[in-house]
Every structure is written in structure tokens, then in C-alpha cells.
Image 1 (cartoon, rainbow, N blue to C red):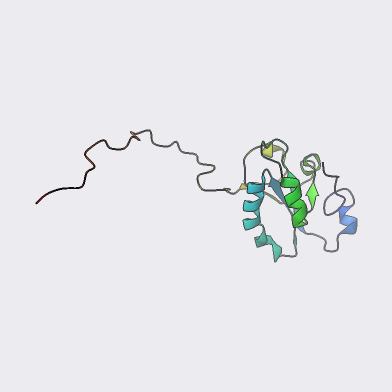
Image 2 (image 1 turned 45 degrees about the vertical axis):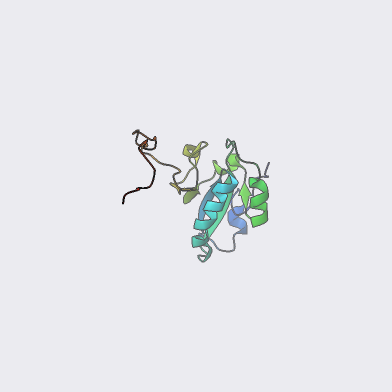
Length: 141
């Protein structure tokens, strides 16, 4: 379990801010795979010193093992879920639609975390059996 952050979010965050008026982005980490995908997108914010990224770990993912260690290795600022849903953010980014994302006080952008994930359409339900004809090569003259 993560401790509540005092900076860059929290009750005294503004007092300690060296750059007032920063935009805050919440990155929601569900699984290691989802964090890996977020790390494809979040570097877009790195060059903008007016943006502060804070991570939170989703509570309900069935595959959350390793997420804490991965975020620690990244040196990420990680707020507990309870604190993250109390705070207001300018944007939230996630690579999974699980958990109570509706509780986050920010516009939420969901990026796919892999080919075929987050599909809305149903697959076709045609005949998936291979053809059962003669598969021997032609033996013509």
C-alpha cells in the first residue's frame, strides 16, 4: 500500500511547488502490461515542464502483481487510489478500462494496451473449419 502523497498532489502541494500552475496528469496502472503501454505514451509529456505525472494503482485488477515494483523502478510518484480519486487532475490516462474509472475527477483517455484489446465489434460467426477437399498436389501429364 502506498502512502498518501504530500507533493505533487495533496494538501500542501502548492506550498512546495517550484513551478506554480502545472497541469496534472494521472496515469492509472492496472497491470505491468498496461504500465508498459502507458510508458509508450507518457514520454510525450516529459519535455513539457508544465506537466506533472502522478501514477495510481487500480484496486481491482486480477493481474496487478509486479505493478508496485515496476512503478518503483521507474521512480514514479505513486498516489494510493483513495487519494487519487479525491484529487482533481487535468487529464487521466489508462491502458485498461477496469476498476472505477468513473470516480476519477478528470477527463479519461484510454489507450489500447495491445492488438485486439478494447474491441467494440463482435467477431464474425462464419464457418471457421478448414476446407475438406482434396489437398494432394496436381498429378497431371
